[in-house]
Amino acid sequence: MSCLDYFYFLLSRKDYSASQLRQKGQEKGFDNEEILEAIAQIQDRGHQSDDRLVANSIASAAGKYGKSSVKRKCLQKGIAGDLFEQVWEREISENLNSEAEKLAELKAKVMRKYKIGDWKEVDAKTKGKVLNYLQYRGFNAWEIWHQWQTESEDE
Image (cartoon, rainbow, N blue to C red):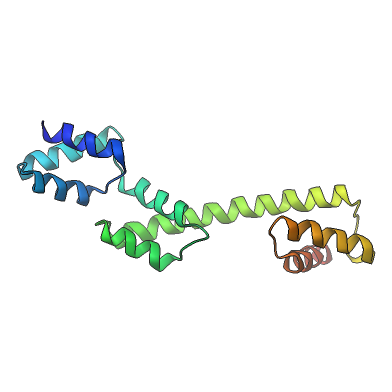
């Protein structure tokens, strides 16, 4: 089995960083030049990417673990700290934009559903229904309510 075939075998089971592949190749007894050449071919074909590995680690840890925990796991896999920071900033900015869009869609849906024109003039019964609606879906209802009220004041 060649080094390239061995790496394809490993990557078919799970994602590995380039550093982990290099270590696995050395443990298997392959020549260092052959290892580097195989890693370069795999990366050129898009089958291995440290960038993608970090992004997947961040996505799988979302809501469960913090930045330091995810960074520690990536460093253990041999991924450079500066690469982690670049991917972290990119992923966080993308998630913030998508969350803002989702909240805007939710606000429009709530306004349609409960026929709300102005957030200052909502009666107590409707306010209770909206808060229950938000809480049932896992949101901090009071925080979102105050955010929407301040947005309507700003407009």
